[in-house]
Length: 80
Image (cartoon, rainbow, N blue to C red):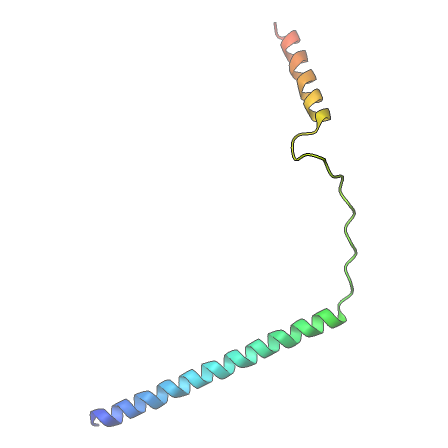
């Protein structure tokens, strides 16, 4: 075979592969979008989670600090 025939065969093989990948990815994107629409349409709404107690600051609560301080003071008084 001459170089022209090889390049033509290579080009057609490359074009066939690229078209195949493009078609596959297009079908995949369409299927994912369709499934997403179906799930949002037919799914039951989730129950809202119970509210957790919110602290005014992000630090350690004062009750914890008091308990830790009392435990340290008791440890120090017992181990003199």
